[in-house]
Amino acid sequence: MVKVFFNNSCNICRTEINHYKKHSDKNLEWIDVTDNIEAQKITSKSYKELLKRMHVINDGKIIEGAETFLIIWKNIPKYNFLYKIFKIKPFFYLLSFF
Image 1 (cartoon, helix red, strand yellow):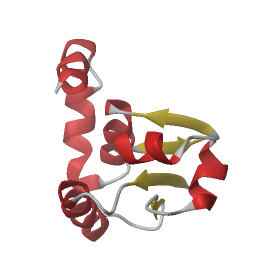
Image 2 (tube, rainbow, N blue to C red):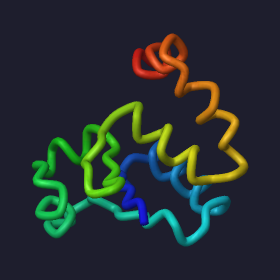
Image 3 (cartoon, rainbow, N blue to C red):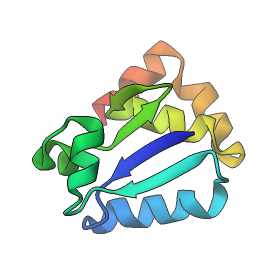
Image 4 (cartoon, rainbow, N blue to C red):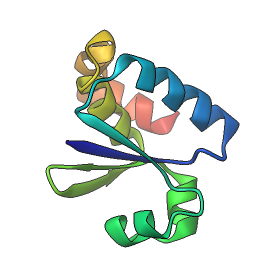
């Protein structure tokens, strides 16, 4: 199971994650980092770091930033096409930049 750590106190983040939740199945676990000390322990990240960027634990590895979207999209059939596009290096660099 992939664990997705997101900032539910951010309106943009909450809106996007709620959309993904509607289309995902049980292979993604959504964890709100807002005032969540357990999330800090699991990720070994500070509260400030968790609020600033989305994090994912996939196969025991902590991943942050743009790569988290690749993992989410790979695990949601409706968005798998985005994974296939943005896993290509030049497109991934664009995703990372924005």
